[in-house]
Image 1: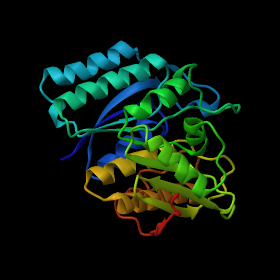
Image 2: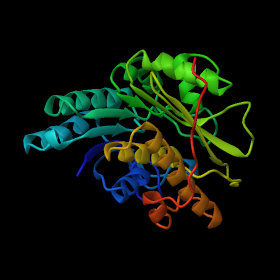
Image 3: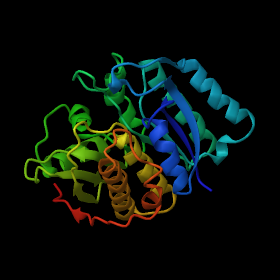
Length: 289
């Protein structure tokens, strides 16, 4: 049984952060150790929420507690998502260092949540984006930015798949072995399709699924995407099968949510398709640069 330490936000109601990531990973046969960076009543795009963030020192203390009972060598991966403060980001670096000291084969998958400037969007504190851009690439074994976050990682706008492949390789030269672009905007793609991209130093694969016309897009899709990719990779999938399974599983959840006319992700209703998707979307090789 593979074990992943998942360091993300948590909502009591709904599905975002660990609340979107834990169940899919477990459904895929991976054990999850959730460490919640914040605990909110619901995600912030409702416009009202209650709750608070955990202190960065307590994050490290909790992992030290796992180490004290001799369990850190069993940790196969660390997955981080939403981090509320630069201090929390530094705590993740310290935690990854401790995990890798206990298990040198463990890998770190960074979902670099940088927030948005739009009203009602995801908000992160000042300094978090800078930490993710300047520090995390040299620490992470894999990163999963969306289009906007990839642009911020390389400091320029990206318009095509070729642009994105080049940008991913630029980040890879700073440290990560794998770049999963959870949502790619490509001026040459149909407007009703949702693009994803995965890149290594030697491979680049593009995948598409339908873009469903929600009145308001559900939250937590990116957290779900990272979780499925991590789980399939831990279960031994090579790059393309892990990517295609991720694309198919996320499509199943989003499609089920849309068909049910719901806002929160229908993770439980779509659980069988998370494990064994009925619809599959073949990836194709991107033009390499």
